[in-house]
Amino acid sequence: MVQLVFYVFATILVGSAAMVISARNPVHSVLFLILAFFNAAGLFLVAGAEFLAMILVIVYVGAVAVLFLFVVMMLDIDFTKMREGLQRYAPIGGVVGCILFVELVMAGVHWGMSPVMPAPITGGLGQPGGAATNTGALGNLIYTHYILLFQLCGLVLLVAMIGAITLTLRDRPMGRRQIISRQHERKRADTLEMMNVPLGQGTDANGGFIRPNDSYYVTAVPGSYGVPAAEKREPGEGDAE
Amino acid sequence: MADFFFHTLAGQLILMVLETLAVLVPLLIAVAYLTLMERKVMAAMQLRRGPNVNGIFGLLQAFADAIKMITKETIIPAGANRFLFLFAPFLTFSLAMTAWAVIPTGNGLAVANINVGILYLLAISSLGVYGMLIAGWASNSKYAFLGSLRSAAQMVSYEVSIGLVIVSVLLAVGSLNLNDIVLAQRHVWFCVPMFPMFILFFISALAETNRAPFDLPEGESELVAGFFVEYSSLSFGLFFLGEYANMILMSGMVSILFLGGWLPPLGIAPLTWIPGPLWLIAKILFCLFVFIWTRATFPRFRYDQLMRLGWKVFLPFSLLWMIATAGFLLATGLLPQGVS
Image (cartoon, rainbow over all chains, first blue to last red; front, side, top):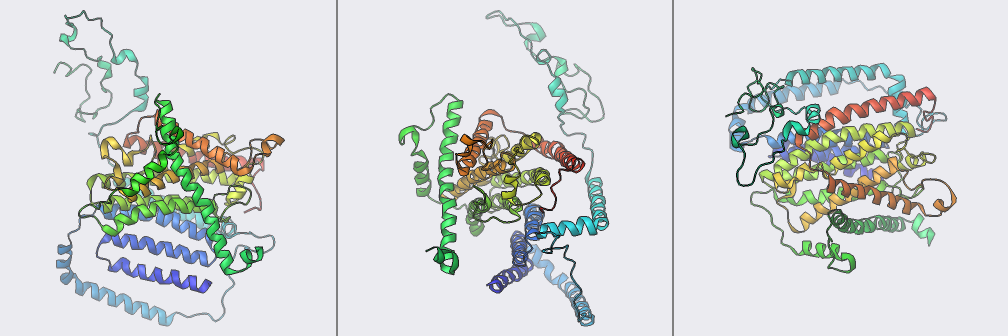
């Protein structure tokens, strides 16, 4: 029974992995990639590693592949143009593929397999006094035995994250900004003026228009809506336009 | 008889199907009546009557809606990706149903009482975004596509804070099993010591289910109806069912993580006479009422406000709270040991 389930998952995994690189439509490729992730999670479940299976689904399917799909859906792909490029790039691609294949064969031939399997580091799974579930065993291994390596991995990721932010961060002075504290500071008197206008006569105040007070304009933020970034807007300026 | 059900393969299969039906049939009826409840409660809040023609108090309205929806014509827009277009609502619906397998309605009373139950829930709820993304892309419509892009960004943003809230609950429990999470709240529900996290999780649940005030993916005033604008008939109905089933699921998660699941508020005599599943249903109903109440009360967030709230407010706060929880548990020696 377990073997049957394993072969079902493995077949679909390999098949969808093949479809990832052979599907015409890149969105279909990503969807096949998600199917492949799913079946890999299924294989983990068959192996009894339920924690890894769930984490694979949460991290790769739930977050990474969503962003993949997000980007790929927005690509503007012209299929006829892609086919034009095929003949130009096919020889180079073929050469690179051949080199990789030869290297793989060489590595496979010289890969010495030890006849004795080293004892696996289990984190005390199922042993008396050890962790009862593989979640606990993984926690033991990562946070007790390999804490330094784990923290270093985190540091590498942090550096990558800071790098990505630095590369993409730019100050866009022309954008509209919302400063919530300023909005909360607003009083009714700043924006609203109650006038007792006689019937049929209107009012002459402000040239016949009722305008909000000057303080309403977002003068403090250079680069607010309609204001050039460089110069700071003076209160009252432009009101009469 | 018992021997047949527990020891033969056929018996186990029949038992499995029966268990599944015992969860799904009440769930689907609950979804049908949740739509009625929403309309009735919102009507009461807005001084209207709500549906009151079909059956007494409009009780048959849900079925009338269902029959109307099924008998409509299915329209597939020109240029749509036919398979994916029809696949997306099925995905949304089946994911919303699948997640219910691990929800415990009593002590050990779940279809699957698995060790990593809470991770399973997180995984299933994070898959919900695919239904929307695929629907938006396959519709070949700009409104649907914009809606699906919004939903993708929104769900990814709020999942991070949901994950951190769950981690701080798990720190206090010491297990990923949903049953253990409820049993850990025997003495005090987690909504008392972790009140800010309870609020934060509830708001994130609103964003995760695309409910008002975070219903940007389907913002009627900007995107017509968002990602399912091109859907009609049964395929629309499946989206609708999936969305409401997700609401009930999220209410169930709030109840289990913070409101003590099937446990009564106090372990004293008159309260313990009421069976556990009824307590869970009462708590879920309370959460659903707050969901509807929120919808009737608050205007929709703007998109940048939504992103600011998720990344600049919820994420740092939940991270800080998680570290504080871990530090507190370690300092007071309350950290659960050896349960793993």
